[in-house]
Image (cartoon, one colour):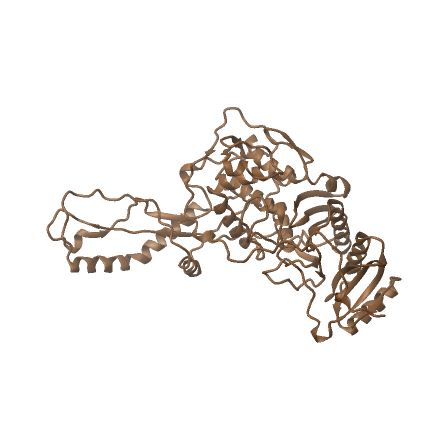
Length: 546
């Protein structure tokens, strides 16, 4: 008897599943499954936290021996954590090691607060950087990846970020292959040690787990001239996640060409704004002020007030306004040049760069955001990602030992105590209004094998396509004793027959006779074609339909 394909009960699985495989040399897609579905990234978030830290070091904003203050909020983060205490000061090098190797939540939060002044501002900057890197399906709410409303990413975006870490910061990339590291107050072990030890050529990058996300991994491996980067989201266990990752990387090495022209990613282009507040200074020593006595103040310092108050005539005000309008274009050009100079990118190869751009679109976007007023007496408010210039230490010389993540700290070396730094107004870093992914279902997972089709932005639950248009057919690959065995067969089959199964959904049905491996959501013609191709491969296959 032929069963209605998606009316049968389905197996319980940890979270919606997604995967993406990329040739790291070119950035080209090799395999995709639900790659644009917005899911919980868990600690894969820390890849962006570390990217931002490496960027800040290369720009001279901080040094590896800069000391960051641990807040009560950071110290209270749940495990995994390094064990930091409120009021403690710790070098950035140790925070990086703890976040990258142990996946310490407290260390990641301290990095974010130290670089931006607060975790919320840092998350906004992370989201802005994600956009600059082309990660359009990602939004961050914190620095460590703990489940939060509006915090999500995709398998495609995390793979993109993994590739950027390798190419943009090769001088720091080796931290992701460390099995252990000295984190200052403790020696920490890698959460990715099992995969690094078991898969030939693996050299990173980051694991992640929460109950809502399942078991996640972004991995990179090199064999010969080939380098493959891949991401798995929603694994059911560490072993399952690692097994799927091994299958994906194997398929990637098998499909990637041996000789190909390497295409390195371009530096990220970040939009920043510079707002200039001008004040009208009125001479107060004459009973009636003349137009010449009403002028625009070009300095950020206010003029001291006189003891008497002048009477300002309407003619004087009109004249002042006219001169202000006439001088605005020149002043704008001057302020734009100043901003470009202050944010000139580092000349070091492969380091991230920030390009300032004053565009009408940025001004339009800023008009919809709440205005942040600068401190009284300040003439400008710069919405860049850097700390105030007064708080920046001098960049370390390139041959300085402090430029290495593994180098011990220098006794008596200058340190930055990041404690009460007031961050610049951050209007260009506003969080997007996209909703958070829903908590995972405890009873259902349906996955898409369509490389181009993404799930709706509002949902993390991957649902079956509508049955209209004749897509109520499928194929069954048989019954299996375990869910894992059925899942592995579906994954291998999808990789081998991606052309004929392009529009299908994979699903494991938990029946009384065992776990049935199915592809559903197909037309009758595509189901018959797929079955014929699978039978030719000596694979058992049955067409199922309404």
